[in-house]
Amino acid sequence: MTDDDTRRTLLEEGVKELETRMGGPSPLAQPLHEALLGAVFPLSTEQLVWLARENDTPAVVLSLLGNLPQRWFESLDAVQQALESQAQVGEQATELSMAPMPPR
Image 1 (spheres, one colour):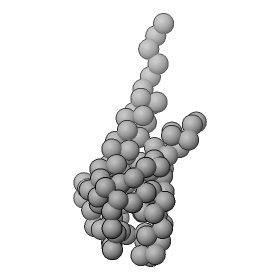
Image 2 (spheres, rainbow, N blue to C red; image 1 turned 60 degrees about the horizontal axis):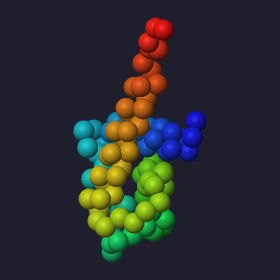
Image 3 (tube, one colour; image 1 turned 90 degrees about the vertical axis):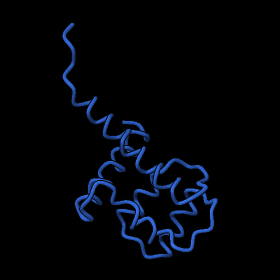
Image 4 (cartoon, rainbow, N blue to C red; image 1 turned 180 degrees about the vertical axis):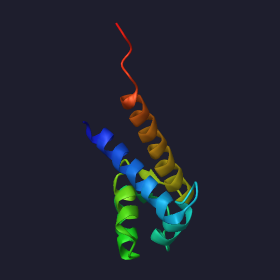
């Protein structure tokens, strides 16, 4: 398993845990808003995690932020979109890995 696969798996698990806890199809908006309160964008992935820690963010949200690719984010919406797209990629990878092998 590569680092990208591990990140996707962790993101998928984190999003599912948030959905379970928060109830709803897109539970990231409120926890992200609270985690990144006071953010002045653009911010790097490392800076997002640092700010979230300063805001006493729950570990599951810290984990999601920490598993984002290393890059700069221009807004809170950009962070949310990156998290959601990574979770969707993780779900697709999981579905593909569970699909039966075609006969030869």
